[in-house]
Amino acid sequence: MNILNFTQAMRWMRRHKKLVIFVITMILIAILASCITGGTTGNAMLAVGMIIGGIDDGKHVVDGPLTTDLSNEGSPELLLNEIDQQIVKIRPMSTPIDQISRYAGSKHSGSMVVDYYSVDTKPTTTVLSQNVSESDVSDGDETPITVINTEDNDIFDPTDTILVQNTPGFEPDGTTESGQDLMLYVVSRDKNGVSVIAVNGPTFNNVRNCLPSIVRGIPLVRMGRAASELDVQSPQFESLPKKNRNLCQIFKMQVEQSTLQRLANKEVGWTMSDQEEAAVYDMRLGMEKSYLFGVARQLWDNTKKEYVYFTGGIWNQAGKDFCIESSTEFNASSMVDLMHDAFTGNAGSKRKILIGGSDLISRISKFDYNRVITAGQHVSKWGIDFTELRSKFGCLYLLLSEVFDEVGMSECGIVIDPEYIQKYTHIPFSTEQLNLKKSGVRNVDALVMTEASCLVLRYPNAHMRITTR
Image (tube, rainbow, N blue to C red; front, side):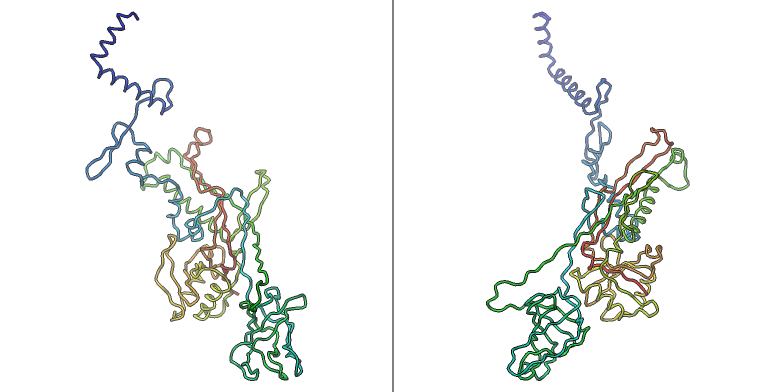
């Protein structure tokens, strides 16, 4: 281009400045759209939409198609981020264990094998394993030290105090019963037994705080430690957690619908989404049974030439048992005993869940409630409706689970503490579209759902099995 032509072009651009700016802008937009859509052959279409307001605060898309970005901008609650939000809404009453574990949240596991630690509280009660004779002392002897043996001597340390139940203590004069139980002070402990001194024992031959005769089988309760004025240290307290193991199980469910089935006219609106919901329910029901009664094993499949993992259920993880006589009538007294065992002897919470079969729930529902055991109103928690039973020990949320009926345990149940149930997930619940058409397998729309997970009870003694005999 010579100087004359260049000068003429510049003059033309100055006279048509607006047109030039418009053309340049459109070219830049076209280039940007081509980069976004990945077009390299020059045939990419310009499709940039925008959100505008409508009547009554409505939203509309103009100058382009509706995309997920525009949907999130115009209606941020329209699209669900995870399918798990839908799972918790599918028949939660039928799968309470799975439902509670999903609401409580899960921890990610980097392996199919889950190792976890649980720690128990130090036992506080035991019984006398041998008879104790009364102290043989003479006038002028010092306060006698007696060696006793229990079924669990290791729970006692020096300076502990022991309450001897059903054995009377004495007044300071040592001759009159005080109406209180006998209390002992632990001096030492060795392989021969526990050396103790009576704190409020009787007086024999002018020797105070002797030990009366005590028969074997008497309950002993470990109480607080008692130090002297110059004591600086105390016997060391040790507590070691116990290692346990569970395996994650890969749960899968696949839904298929042929292309002709999808295109055919139907009398009712039965779609792929309806099949998916039914499949999710069936999958959750199977997971519920595995979470309850599964056996933790690792099995070699000779056909597939790989290991298959099976998760262990929480039924066998519970640390306590309560047995009901099947031949006797279940009454308020039986319910008080059940509440007593469920809420005492552990550091669990005062609100627990009782899930049982139809016969157990029927027996609990038949007796007349009184001022000791009261039936409260229905309580909704974790997306489930419970019946609340209240007592002086705590509150039980009662719920029927037909899973117990299906496995032949309609008279049984389990009390779980929701604070100490933990779910581990190796593969979160997810869905994947299978393109079986393109792969040449069959002409269907296919969807597979997958989750690899397990349940553990972090504090076994806070949970209790209910059985019959």
